[in-house]
Image (cartoon, rainbow, N blue to C red):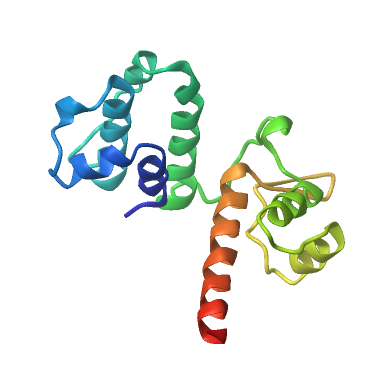
Amino acid sequence: MKSTTKMIIKEFPSVEQCMKNLQEVNSLDNTARVFLALAKCFEHPKENSFDLGHLLKIDGEYVEFALDLINIYFHKDTYLISQPSHSYVIDDLINQKEFAQRLSANGFKYDQAKMAVYYSRGKLPAERVKIAGIPFWNEYDVQQYTEELKGKQEIIDKWKG
């Protein structure tokens, strides 16, 4: 399952049931139906196309989420865009300090100095963009890395048992 589909299911759990044909599509609200169509496109793009016009039919708060998913899909799930030729709006970017703060908020002891060391050693996800030599990531990168750390912590906790 693509990472973008997992993100949809996390936000709309009923979509997973519909994808497995365990629930009727008619039981979904319009927004969930649009995300079901998007998930189907992510999983099987040759069989399921997605019309961007559907985004005009959903709750406004989810339009940005859908656009982020499409961006992530082409950058991460398909690798069709391996070397982005444009940068993001600076407000959407997360620097090392903010990255460390978000990790700390999730229970991991990170500060800006530790982030700098990890970055220099290649232990962090690749930055989305560098501006004046400063690396920046997006929300997706931070979430994925946080999930990765949580998975590692679970293994350590089980091992300590």
